[in-house]
Structures are given as C-alpha cells and as structure tokens.
Image 1 (cartoon, rainbow, N blue to C red):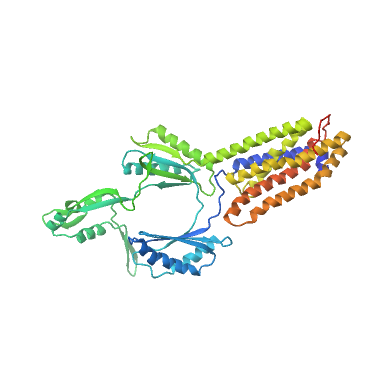
Image 2: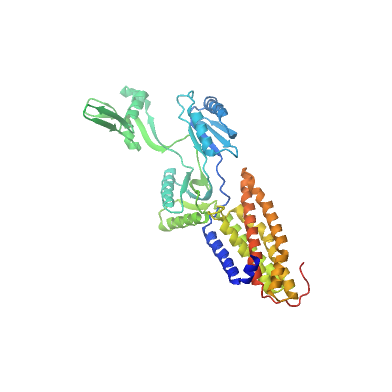
Length: 496
C-alpha cells in the first residue's frame, strides 16, 4: 500500500483532500456544548403532601417509599428529602442497569403502596432527563411582580418561536392566588358562616362535571363547567337570594383581590431589584452556539422594538458559550502556533518543503478526528473534554511525520530515486506503526470504564486515539508522495 501511494501521488492528494473536506463538513455539523452529554442515571419519586411538617412527610411518605424500594435491583444509592409540602426520593442506578427497566420496576413498587395518607397526592415517578443551561435572561425592575410575570411569559413564547430553542424554564415566579378576605361582622349580620362562603365558592368554581343519560335508543353525555379566572368573577358569586329582588354576593361580605401565594416564600432579585428569570436549556440535539445566538438576537429585537414597559430591563448572564468559544479559540491558536514552530524548527535541520509537509499533518489529523466524531461514528460534540483531547494530541501527532520525513531526507541524500524513498518509509514503517498503536491502546483503554468519570475521560481518550489513527495514515500514505521529489542540500545537523 505504501508503494502504491508513492507511485500514485494523485491518489495521495485525493486522499488528503477527502480527509480535509469530510473533516471540515463534519466540524460544521458537530454540536457545541460545555460538557459531554452523559446519559441520565436516576429515577425520581415525588409525592405532594401538604402536612405542614417535614417529620410527618418523612414518617408517612418517605419511609414507606424507601421500604418498597428494597425489593428493586440495580439501585446504587437512594437520597430522600422530606419537607412540609411533601417528599422527594432520588434513586441512582448502577452502571450496568438499564434506566428504563429501573423506571418500570420502581413505578410498579411505588404504585403498589396503599397506606399513603388520604391528603397525599398520587406519587409521580419519572426518569431523569439530560439537562444543561445555555444562557439566562433576566427581567428586572422596580415594578410589580404581576408585570414581570406577564413580560416573562411573553418573552418565553417569543424565544420558543425560534427553531433552535427547544426549552425555556421560568425562574422566580410566584404562584397566582385569588384571596377572599371575609368580613366577619358582615357574615354575622347576614346570618352566614365561613362554611357557607366556602360551599358557594366550591359550587361555582367547577371546572368540569360530566354524566351520562342512557335510554334504550340513545346515550347522551352531559358536561357542565363554571370556571372562575379573576377576582371579579369570584366577587360576583351568589351566596343567597335576599327575597327583595336582589342577591347577596361574595363582594357584599368579603374583599376579593388578585395576588400571589405567600407560601412557599419565593423571591428573586437581580442587581438589587425584583426579578423574574428565564433559563434557556439545551435539548438532546441542541447546539450551544446556535441557541445562544438565537437568544441574543431575540432579546435585541425586544429591546429595539420598545415592548418592555417603563421600569423593566433585560439582562443576559450565565452564558455558557463563552467557555466553548474560548476553548475553540485556544485550539486554533495552539494549532497555528504548532504549525509555525514545526516549520521553523525543521527548516533549520532539513528543508522548508519537508518542514511544510510534516506540519500539514496537524490539520489532516484533526480533520480525520472531526470526521470520526460525527453522529455516524462516535457521536461526540465539541466540548470542554473533547477539545482537551486535541490540545493533548497536538504534541504527539507530528512524531510519526518527523521520523518518516527525516528517513526520506536521509536516504535521498545518498540516492535520488523512488526506490530510496520507498526503502526509507518501509524502514521506519513498522516501528512508528507499533508506537502509534500502543499509544492509541493506552489512551483508548480509558473509554472502557463505565462510571461517570470514565465516560467523561473516554471522550478525551478516543479523540486522541482518532488523531493518532489519522497520523499513521498521513505519515505512511500521504507524506511520502509529497516528499518523493525532495532534493536534499547541505545541512549542519540531523535528527535521528
């Protein structure tokens, strides 16, 4: 194979262009993110139980959930949290356990619990989803929470209208609440009690009541609802007929107002002012740089269009794309610096043409690694871990090319023939091949560890191994064809 590529330099050039082209196209499609997307490894059991006591939630909910989980296999550890409003249990799986199977097993056991308190809601069992923050948008100002809430919902809808943005979470929102503050003296004057008011509100706030009328010839389904959405609707609820042609309403005995829940207490401030946040997250296929660019463009449109009320400001922070951009910039800068230094050093001891083609091994090896990182092979992204692999590999990649280039240069000093070039490559082919393979094995062994840290370092190791693989291809098949016509001159030293 070495001899065939040496006799057919056009094929070597085609191979070089093919690697560079496929690598560049793959690079454009690679996702950019801060850290690799590790598969989720936990199942969460949540039970809402407004007992007002964390101790009661632990005794009546948490301990019973943990007890039934003793029958489930594949659990690594369990972490439970009890509060006055309920219980949350997080179950982490072992490395060899399938998450879907664990989810089904946990759900089957939890659904079988029959001794939960009557006021507790049904347990919710869900598997963890991959989650990562792209950027945060903050709405803040010395205005009411209602205004911030309204603007946050509108901005969230605007962000989700972008094709690259799949998920936006609202942070710092307080739950809306309609408060009915009853005047006890008015109730006594009308001969009513709090229970009468409560029954009237419950009866007039029905979301849906359904029933079925059946006859031998037909079946009729009946539905009825009477939803109430704001304070005015509740204020007009009738308590009773006064008998004089008028009706007694809630507004006659109580003050009804729109507000927000006082418990749980939840406030968010930004730059010392009341705030509501929007967290833009990545989905499983999202590109960090594209998502952040879309958010910045949409926020800029909002500022320019004047949609923000007076006193409300917008700010962007926690931009994770800065880290990825900085790391990519480091790779480009180090790569260019490496190429310049290699050319400068080898030009002193060999020839500028030899130095140039040896240095060209860096972009060729990187392009090959980018191609293997695509979804068709490794399915990696450009992140903090994988880019670190390129930085580490940069100092190793030119070793094979330097050895092969020096061998060719030395043999062509003695004889300017194609046979000398072939002999020079074959003389060092096996040592450099074995050296490259042992280095690949040393790095690649990190990818066999199934724990979380093993999966992280596995990406770094496989990136280095991919670069080394294409380093061997470039130094054995492409480089000799480019040095087949080199004419050595006088030099002061030699690299052995």
